[in-house]
Length: 241
Image (cartoon, rainbow, N blue to C red):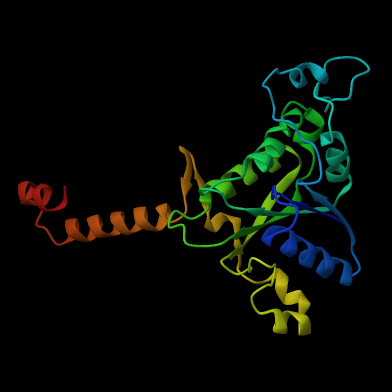
C-alpha cells in the first residue's frame, strides 16, 4: 500500500513531527511504502481566491488541477494523488488548524472544480491530533476543516486519533515502552470514528454531542407528555415548554 503522511505543524521539530515519524515507521514496518510531507519544509502560499482553478478543467491543454500559484503544492498534490491512504498529523491551535496547515487545506480548492476527482472513489484518511492539552474547547473545528477539505481531494476521513496531552515537548510518546514492544498499538491509541466528532443531518452539520443531547431532550419531553392527562394541556405546556 502507498501511504502519505502529512505533518501539518509549522515547527520543524516538535510533538507533531515526532508522532508523524513514529506513525510512518509503523506503516513501513508493516511493509507499506511511505512518503512524508512536512509543511515546515515546503513552501505553500495561501489561496488568494482568484478562482482561476474554476476554469482550468474547461481550458484545453491545462491540467484540471492547475493553480496559478507556483510553489510546492504541485509536488504535494502529486504525492496525494498517487497514495492509497492518507494520514495527517496536526497540532490544534485554538480548536482549529495552524495557519500553515489551513493554507494547505485551502489550496485543495482545484479538486472542488474537477469532475474527475469529484467522481473518484474516496480513499481512507486518518487524522492524528496533537496538542499540549488544557484547552477546554476541544478540536471539533479542526476535524471539520480536515474532513471538508479532504473530501473534495478524493479522501474520506475515517478516524480521528486523539493524542492531545500524550506527546512530550521532547517528542516522547505516552506509553513508549509498550509501543516499542507493540508498535502497531500506536495506530489504535485514542482512535475513534470521525463521526464521533461530527454528524450530518438534513439541515446541516452538528458538533459532537449534539445528537445525544437532542435525543435526551426529546426523550425527556416525551416522558413529560406521557404522564400528563390529555385535558391538562395548560399545565403540560407550563411544565414542558
